[in-house]
Length: 160
Image (cartoon, rainbow, N blue to C red; front, side, top):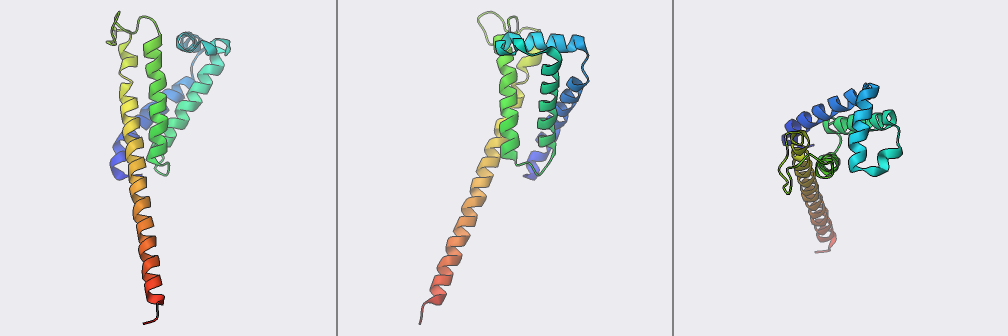
């Protein structure tokens, strides 16, 4: 993990981890509300029990939050997961009626809590891209060193 990623990973990881822990401890009413909201955007979830959905979402958020907080998880991987998670939340914003002003992407008061999750997509994309580019750069340097070493070895092996 790049040290410059630490503040972003810590902030988003702690926030998402807390959200997941809250879902794991959610009561039946909260599970019903979450299920109703999620199944509006994702109709395939209608057949899933509210408590089960809430537990699965909670486990997913705990896993994502933990991955962001654990420095051994590559930023490219953690960032990709964060961007995907944020995109799923933004889809809720786009699909659930009443979240946006009519004919606009601008949020209503009720939609603002979901619309603000656009920062998760931005943060995840930043981590992923920087992680991929840093990894590619390191791999390129490593390959160049191998070629250089092989060339030097071949040169040294030539009779003079």
